[in-house]
Amino acid sequence: MNDLHFNKIALVGIGLIGSSLAHAVKARGLATEVAISTRSPATLTRAEELGLGTSYHAEAKDAVRDADLVIVSVPVGASGAVAAEIAPALKPGAILSDVGSTKSSVIAQMAPHVPAGVHFIPGHPVAGTEHSGPDAGFATLFEGRWTILTPLPDSDPAAVASLRAFWESIGSMVEEMDAAHHDKVLAIVSHLPHIIAYNIVGTAEDLETVTESEVIKYSASGFRDFTRLAASDPVMWRDVCLHNKDAILEMLARFSEDLAYLQRAIRWGEGDKLFELFTRTRAIRRSIVQAGQDTAAPNFGRDVAEHKQD
Amino acid sequence: MNDLHFNKIALVGIGLIGSSLAHAVKARGLATEVAISTRSPATLTRAEELGLGTSYHAEAKDAVRDADLVIVSVPVGASGAVAAEIAPALKPGAILSDVGSTKSSVIAQMAPHVPAGVHFIPGHPVAGTEHSGPDAGFATLFEGRWTILTPLPDSDPAAVASLRAFWESIGSMVEEMDAAHHDKVLAIVSHLPHIIAYNIVGTAEDLETVTESEVIKYSASGFRDFTRLAASDPVMWRDVCLHNKDAILEMLARFSEDLAYLQRAIRWGEGDKLFELFTRTRAIRRSIVQAGQDTAAPNFGRDVAEHKQD
Image 1 (cartoon, rainbow over the protein chains, first blue to last red):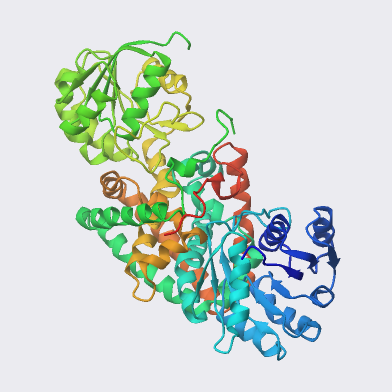
Image 2: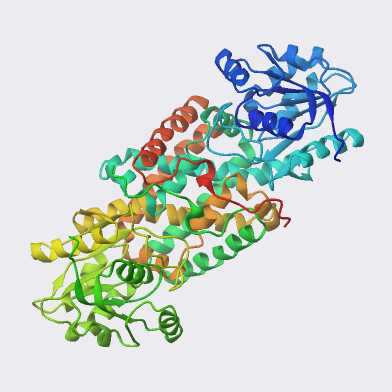
């Protein structure tokens, strides 16, 4: 796969994921041309200042012309509009993919617009940070992380192999599954954690008996972890909630049911039930560290400025 | 405060907090003698191997004899039994403190046993990691973190000042408040986050439609953060739940109410409500970073072994 090369890659959307792709493509020399487009003039200017591509376009349709590989990295709610705009300009034989956190909805929005001869293969790199925008990207974001492809039943195997090679060449591991299963998996590993994090931060902010200054001062006891997820891009997460509704509602129902069980155990002083849960959850942490998906260092090995007064 | 020195400090319990205290006391030369006790023979042997103190005792009452400062670092459910055991051996004028995550319950358990002439001043260093046991401790754990003291109405101001100086000398900032307020603050910043983390990890484990291997592979998308908290010491957290019941149930009720609101917004596609919450939660993250209580680095700056296959 060392000779993987594209004449032209188009990146539609240049936030955290789009700009990380730009850095990774540049670092590995994967394309002669990298065309970048975003609807925001300020973001486009910034992308150019950062030298993320070789050409910059206010209109997505201008960026995708003649591209061999087009990757759409926009909030999932905008997928349909982007597909409608770029469809007439796509080159026959081009691969069209995306990075959206929901897949059934993206397919429903984009597939109807894809012209015959264009290979539409939805994708999702399971990687990110709480930062957003073109300055947030970095070339190694995908290294050691998984990218999920959800090819359609009639996807061309050669095009799928080519897209897989692209992700592998920037350090990602690749898995294929169907879109419905992807949406269930992500609902539990990503969407529910973010929703819960946003929710608990909201709850803490609204308390009358505990001040915000206290929440901040004592946040190292657990709360601060949630604030990282709850600092993620609000547009992206609004769209995820709206576009993976069924799977998220299913996971929320399971979560709430389990929480009611725990709450009842606390109310009635059933220490054995609490101890049983608190013990078995340790094993999964060990597995995640062993799989190279997290660090074993205490507190994620974070390095916090010390002795700083608030 | 540079000449703060104790003839003898006794550490009852030598887990993460106790062993961190031992390291910090040694590093700063705060005591001539450091007597260590724990009920577990294996832990006591390990503490001695690590050279955490100057003497080692299977019985807490033997450790506290003649000590000027006694710090009890045991799961909060064991506080009463420890107090009953050590009470007859405490030296008049000694300061007796603890590090428990709940304060009203600890006071109710310990205060009745404290002999006249001994200064009982409950405390709680708001610091920790997900690791436990005598090997988990390190001298800098308390640096830049807050310790909360909850003196009793009749606490001797000189003794409170001395205990405050102790914590400050090992890098902590110190705040005083009453026990009931402490328990409410900690319920939201620490207890609820841990309970929620344990719960979501349990929910994920119990799913029939998503395998454990998938949860592990894709955990970098949010889930892994929760597994860190959910790997904390199960005995400690069982006891916290049982001993701060009222405040925890109050916070759980608020949390569930807010989550129901969010769930309803997802079901009915009310994007504006989601966007409003997801936007205002960003501010508190910034405040925590500015207060020096967390790092601004993406993903906590964690360094995960890359390209490791599962």
